[in-house]
Image (cartoon, rainbow, N blue to C red):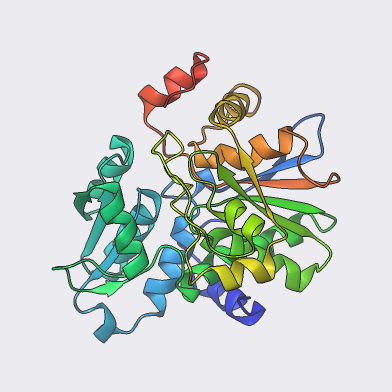
Length: 312
């Protein structure tokens, strides 16, 4: 668990970068939406990236910063690196959405695209051969998790009687950060990870009681799912989360359409996972918060989903 004091310190450190995002109720339901898609880089990642980079010393930043990301952490790191006046190198999977890659480059980041398996290995190894600099891990860095945890502080303050929180699961850094804050302030609240069916890392680990490999395939839910929970993250995940749910691509696309049609909210695939789980009735009941983690989606993909399709 990330100590509450570290999360509170992160809130002070990221002031002026991340914004306090709104918590809106889905009409006629007990479902609430935490709109992290409204951050300056259109995802929650600015919180953890800014906390890690602002906490680093000048010597640590002298060689620039490096991360591995499908797009959102990349933008957060590029944004924070530009603010700090240092270079940012981003290792991205070759299927990363064009919209995300263009935003990284606009923020001054250097993109290196590699096959998905090589990208995932970079996350496992916390390094990329031939590139120096401070590696800001998108998941297992405790400073990144503390930055993510600031969302949990806001949830408890804005909805004190919340009962369940649903969080999309990529590597676990978001769910662990939020759960660490929420459970230290409100121990009775349940926090669940939500996996896409295309890579149910957390769900498989909870079912087996340990980290296991899962089959992964790329999809429009590019910011979540993987080949299995990271070994380094499992102790955190097991301690603070109450379990995990799996949702289908069809249900995720339907949730994305609902966000656009009823709330006028544009979410990416991962950003709709939590709502898909809530709408399926798999939450505990009562006031349920869904983390809309980001809104970086290619317009062509969004158009297909809004037209009723379920892209691969």
